Image 1 (tube, one colour):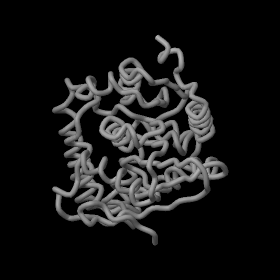
Image 2 (spheres, rainbow, N blue to C red; image 1 turned 135 degrees about the vertical axis):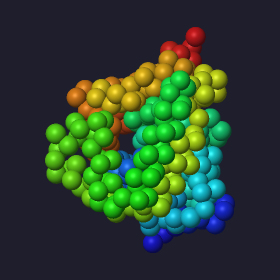
Image 3 (cartoon, rainbow, N blue to C red; image 1 turned 90 degrees about the horizontal axis):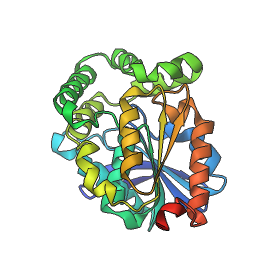
Length: 284
């Protein structure tokens, strides 16, 4: 299996398909590289598509040391993927946990980003809910560490923001749940406690986001209640942000409504290539 070695020696499994302008996909907590299969099938006809499994997600390495996990480390891993594949710049598409990481890449390494897409981004973004978020992350981490994996996966897959997916597409939802159950319990527990539990909120990032000039597409389902406010915050804060709200849809958008996600991404990629993304903002 192809892999890239991060700065601390952690091996990151990756897959790539297609040729052209590169797109790097960064997956959510409950997903892995397979979460973007509908996007890769579509965009690999015209782009070089790269997916990878974050540290803690097999077949990437699963470090046992909690200090090997964190938001800054997740950001550095995306840059390691870019460097390992000799990609000077790429479109960075992140979903949920991956969307937070994509934003951090844009803030710290804007020169590496042709654009950024933040899909289903915003859970735990209210600074006033910091303690509640930390407690929930700790509970989820304990669930994955100590309960049978199939039972923990079934519970997490059915959190309220994914109910629309299960209702509309039981077959697709069952595949998603099965893939979640394949993950490493250790990797999920450490990722939840160290990456999601300790990361800054979107509110904490208001200052750098307000100066972000990277083209930013924000996509959220209108049934994804934990992410609605954060997505609107991104639209109002980042000067180059555009917002797409997908009706009757929840959190697992890349799998639940791939046609809507692909159409929004394709429009952004085309506008960026033409130099037309949010042109009215640049002319002010």
